[in-house]
Amino acid sequence: MKNKEIVKAKFEKQFGTTGAFYFSPGRINLIGEHTDYNGGFVLPGAIDKGMLLEIRENGTDLIRAYAVDLDEYAEFGMEEKDAPSQSWARYIFGVVREIEKRGGKVRGFDTAFSGDVPLGAGLSSSAALESAFAFALNDMYHLGIDKFELAKIGQATEHNYCGVKCGIMDQFASVFGKKGHLIRLDCRSLEYEYVPFDPKGYRVVLVDSVVKHELASSAYNKRRESCEAVVAAIAKRHPEVKLLRDANRAMLDEVAAEVSQEDFMRAEYVIEEIQRLLDACDALNKGDYETVGEKMFGTHYGMSQLYEVSCEELDFLNGIARECGVTGSRVMGGGFGGCTINLVKDELYKPFIDMVQSRFPEKFGRAPKIYDVVIGDGSRKLED
Ligand code: GLA
Image: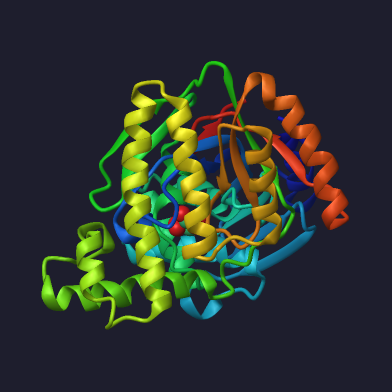
């Protein structure tokens, strides 16, 4: 791991010593988008790229952190009043605060970290960072926190220190990832199943539009509010409905006149997406990748036209995939930029990439990035 050598050198230069290494990955999600905070299902997998950190207790009450990729340093205490101003440092601070809220005792430490998961590309670099610190601190201070709680600590960090009311998918995938497997996660009960994923004859490739998404820019939280508004309307007639997961199309139609047109469309997408994921899982079990791909296109349409979290660049990439005969393609993650995920037959891989690489720059004046997906393991300590 090339990053390890870089982090090691920077840590030594900054702190004059060496520490322990931990790694947490980013994630992909085959299907099931914006379903997690609605209590639905998701189908993510950890990738072979993520955040790597080196860490060592420093015998003080201070956290001294060095962000290698940004070449920025921050030093801060661990009480609520000590919140650092740099956004990257707030992830670390938030994880420490959330551990303390759960009764864990963290002492001061020195750390340096670096990532090879592209930022703002919808691959959950922030969840990778949170999970890396939650995992490392739990291990280093023998806190005995289970993996479910580690994921929830990352999620709570986003909610309480970074302003994004995200679901549990990203942190769960980062902590629980397993090489060669996707995770079919029920986000309401947190029951999960590892689904072997080795689509023979196909490749999974991400095309990065290089449009940086700004989840925190409130658009994400607004989607969540729309879902909650529709649940509140449905629950007046059906008190058993606590989340959109519990609702169906007929219930949504009943409240059509009581919710805004926009909120209606958001809920319509989510209800359909929860079903699409279940259908895609059935198809996956049968090795029917053509149906999985069809569902992915369905998700893209919904995310673009009903949930409205796509953008011109992503719609364009989706259009190229369709034109080229790619099996499935859709915007991945929160949206508003980032990548499309594409399920591509082996023989179409090269023509597809060629087409993307010539057409996208023609239209947008810059090159997209291509990442081949490798499904890797979740958070772990790196032994020498
Ligand atoms: C972001 C959030 C996740 C999830 C996805 C959309 O990645 O962090 O919780 O809601 O968007 O599926």
